[in-house]
Length: 176
Image (spheres, rainbow, N blue to C red):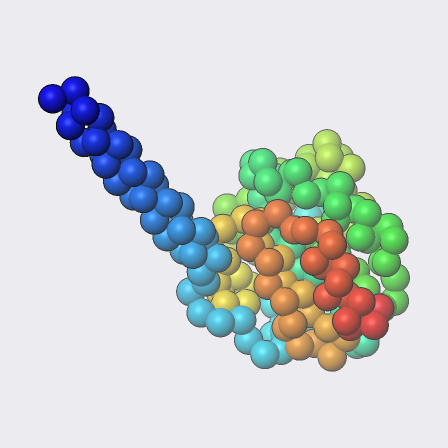
């Protein structure tokens, strides 16, 4: 009887493990989901500056951009700020820039405080209405980054904290 109980226990443990693995797989697949595909080219985005002014944002001609949707109260967003600062410091200029786009629900004051607190050295804007996120295929989770080439084409989407080697590889392919 003791041996039979061990087999049942092993079977239950295997069943629980399979359910957990399926749950992890389903979560990671949903995590990267968007409400739609990103557009082939970056549309004009209506956003706010940290000072609260509403602007129509279009990327400068011939400049690749990494648009990072973030929130000041998102731990993975805060964790990737040093990597984004490094990208901006190393590559920022007339051919590339990082743009931090705070998600809907973030106040201009929170963005200004985050800039000072975390030492953010790249331009920051706010998506106060959520329309910019929707225009780019929907942002389900933060951080989410969108890579746009110098012709304004969306060429990459990264859900979760960015991986510098992956982003650098894509930028190398863009010949920055």
